[in-house]
Length: 286
Image (cartoon, rainbow, N blue to C red; front, side, top):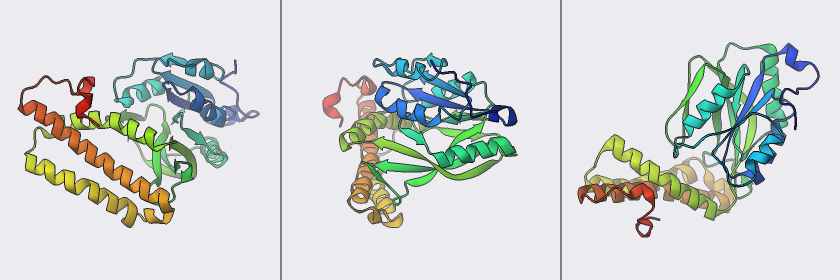
């Protein structure tokens, strides 16, 4: 088993420390690449595992003793992220997912900050997103991400796509982490089909039961608006076929979110049992 405290030479004594925090669930084939990308320069690795049924835990324990299992609270990933932060003993936390890889340029940028010191409490960094194997330079998907922060100075909030609330000033790192979220269209559809259930429920909780005319308007407008944004305004067309398919799929995401909201509120109107999230009515959902 590898010692978490390893760092190049005596750098650890000359700089602030950093923990890599990773959330895992049934990702044994993915997470090893993430661990390899951080093992030689972070001071500790913290893993929060959602009781994986494959050998994810065994893989992670080759790199760290700090593997904690916790039942995931549905899609409220902020709970697990905040738990990971609390388990870290370092000055800084870098939350990195099993489908992400820290590049050498990113490593060097982080170590420079830790060695020189900074007045910032968090840093945004570039994220190079890949879609079906291609780096998506356009379409709004080459953006910044906020997951590197001083421990104790930030907390995650929100459902599904959580946000980091930082107490102090935020800087920016131009170096990038690589992100490989989807290896197939099937995987994309399956993942967002799951997310859409929670999105619909959250919309019902925040917006109540909207008139069907308003729902229909959003079913028509939101997907089209999203496609125009990604493919035309954000120049997704410059990424060729990948850019077109990417833009259509994300337009579909907005359609299915509103369609499932409509389905859920129909059940409310007819006083049917709220079994929307149980999957028992799978013949009604996509």
